[in-house]
Length: 187
Image 1 (cartoon, rainbow, N blue to C red):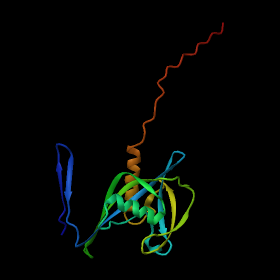
Image 2 (image 1 turned 30 degrees about the horizontal axis):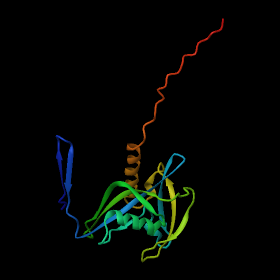
Image 3 (image 1 turned 90 degrees about the vertical axis):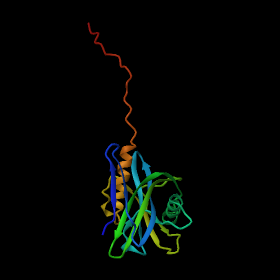
Image 4 (image 1 turned 60 degrees about the vertical axis):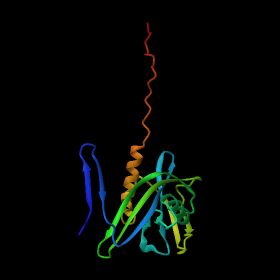
């Protein structure tokens, strides 16, 4: 039986919710690694060559006991892509629940940017620096590509990212300078 509740304050349109986690619960953190090239936005994905059943993923992983979200994200990005990044801002979260196995996980996502330039047209291979030592293939995807190819739930993260991009789009600057009227002086 679901014990979630959503509380809404109609005066401010604010809401809160609560939900008890499953018996086996994991907190995870992930990143949308954001790159730009000639005005176009891209993000980094990877696929495990040694564990192909995991699908195409965004970088991320389990939050270790001694870490906060930011530390986990920077560590996981480095372990899974070799990229050194800086955090831009929190993006959102996704929640998974499997009542049959009494398992749930909450994944918090942040937007990060590489510290050094990345070639958006290049694929590279990298050996995961955690204990699994997976061989990974990494590449960039334009943000306007349909994200349905990503592992479970991660398409929703890219939809949040695209909304964030739209919300933070710089307004176009209008040219308000006065242009002289052209006059025809043909006599």
